[in-house]
Amino acid sequence: MTINIAVAGAGAFGNKHLDGLASIDDAAVVAIVDPVESSARRVAEARGIPHVAADLDDVLGRSDVDAVILATPTPMHARQAIACLEAGKHVEVEIPLCDNLADGRAVVEAQQARGLVAMCGHTRRFNPSHQWVRRRIEAGEFAIQHMDVQTFFFRRTNINALGEPRSWTDHLLWHHAAHTVDLFSYQTGSPIVAAQALGGPIHPQLGIAMDLSIQLKTEAGQLLTLALSFNNDGPLGTFFRYIGDTGTYIARYDDLVDGNETPIDVSDVDVSMNGIELQDREFIAAITDGRQPNASVADVLSCYEVLDQIEQQLGQQ
Image (tube, rainbow, N blue to C red; front, side, top):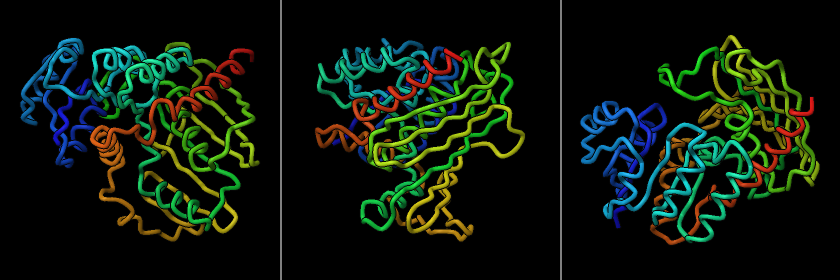
């Protein structure tokens, strides 16, 4: 069974999904969508994709499109996800699902009304390093006591992961914190019952806080300490320290070491070391199997409820 997919967004993450999908036998990319049609056409020609469109609506009416992957600007995610579902298409939307809670809830309602597969790109659930930790948790060999996480970038302009300009502003809370808040809840398996945060000064041009400090606590008592900055002059990315009852593990994307920096081999955890590919494999498998996927929009909504709570706190400061 081949699932025909349209990928919306010819930028950095659209291309990451195209790379991942190229390794999945039962997925076929039949259309690429981007408002800059020349960008879409360049990607289509390089990858042999038959159809190019400048507008998402152009592919939503196509009978040869079963599903859509949205790698579009954050402010469009919820509206476009709902449009896909209403058009009868399965949808995978890149993180974040939304940039306000009401929109996130509207996506979940649309999924429940249609019964289609709707997934959000919470990639950390699929990275082999985090999967390795989860397997130890599920086997009863490790329990998280505290997660200490750093999300560091140096950002002064709106550029994407390829260093190209983009039309929208990235957000430490609704995008980058979403990865960690969801992973913390997923790995601990316990509801978040306390959240507090402090925000740094608002950048005069970007209009967002460039530094955030977030603390969470689960019902079972596990703690998360999360530092986020767009001011860091150094290595870029997010680095997770799992402090548990039987050890400490540090995940740097798909690399995993113990507390003494001894490498841990995670190459046999899954069929690939590419977290985006593994995420896309789950999306395709859920469609084929007729089930909701890991990181379904309903499953991740609790993350955005926590982000909304934090945003309200920050607004009062």
